[in-house]
Image (cartoon, rainbow, N blue to C red; front, side, top):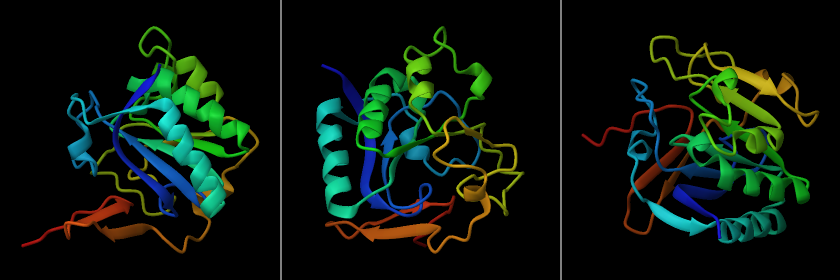
Amino acid sequence: MAWINLAKIIELTEAEGPGLRTAIWVQGCLKRCKGCCNGQFLKIQPAELVPVKEVMSTIKAAKEKYQIEGITFLGGEPFLQAESLSQLAEFAHQLDLSVMVFTGYLLEELTEVKFRGATQLIAATDVLVDGEYEIENTEIVRNWVGSTNQRFHYLSEFYNSEIETRELSVTNEWRIDHSGNIIGNGLPFILRTK
């Protein structure tokens, strides 16, 4: 049975790629980009170990309930869990959903030698956004990327470069959990409580 070290999942978001999506953050990253907006997901440690089949059920339910058009993998670093995520991506395609993946590595670095399952995950990805976040090169034109060095790769016909500059109604989302904590997602931001 395949598992995912899951950091966070949001069944319905408009801030993590084109259209309505389910966003899946994985735990663990070897990079330490200054200003990373998901710093709590960097440590290589067990977060929530979840069977792939359970996440598949979540994706299927989100499609039925919210009519999502795709899923997005973020991190952490998705390619550290490429084998399991490729199963989710293939499942998403069976449901006619798109797959978007954000990685701190360049496409040219995503080889089977470095990341087991990378070839499968790339084959099941519609849009790959690559490159480390560079805090000194903030992106102000393109959607969803934090810095100007990051590249979009269109690996299928599902989307094209139009999505990078289309007008968005949502760029950040804010939720309050049962404990009263404010949780944000979307474009890089800093939440200061004091």
